[in-house]
Length: 118
Image (cartoon, rainbow, N blue to C red; front, side, top):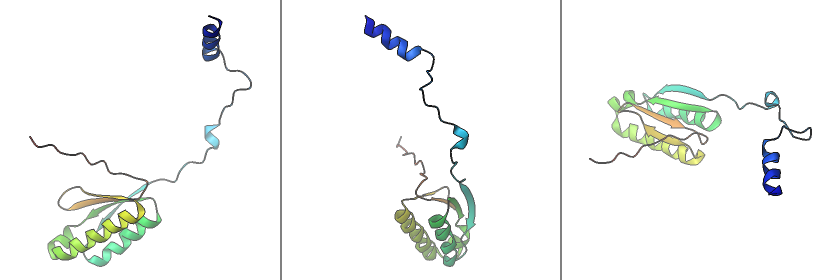
């Protein structure tokens, strides 16, 4: 019975002087995440997106309608290049609509809900 009383006393008693507290104001805050909008009108536009994903805290929202309307093969090449970059940095890529995709660096993940057939 003494052990039970002792356990409750330890758990619910007032803090002692030897308890350790951390000042949250002194903690370093992580750098902010940037969400940037890009547009791909030519395959060369992919280079800027790849550079941003590799070097900074950027989530890219990419409008692919310009290249989709011009050349579907160049669009596939551009998306494959973005996919390879995502694999290299352990990022993620997903389509938002027919004209938009999102590309994230390694610290961010896109939640992809699996659709079930009815």
